[in-house]
Length: 99
Image 1: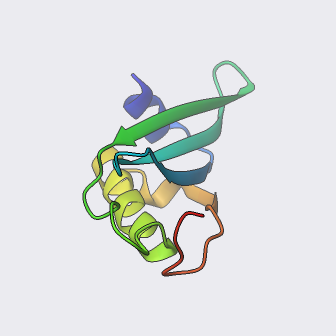
Image 2: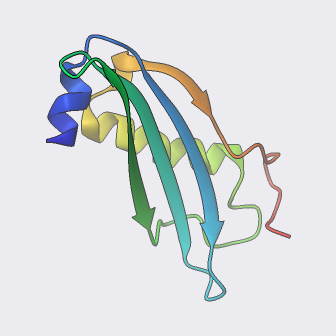
């Protein structure tokens, strides 16, 4: 249902994402999509958390390049490339590590 709603909205989708890891080094990417549902005439927000993502478990793995690879996969999977408006990421420099 969410996939269909995101694909069918005539308006832009605005995304934000954040990467974090738990002590056992498993990494997670949280993606938040904000959009307006024209039928309901209100702003909606959906959150998708992807766990144990490959490539996000080593030093420097939370950088923008790694986040982009995973976000790109989700955009392709949901077929919403042409709908993306603005994107806000975690703001880490490429190659930085969690404190």
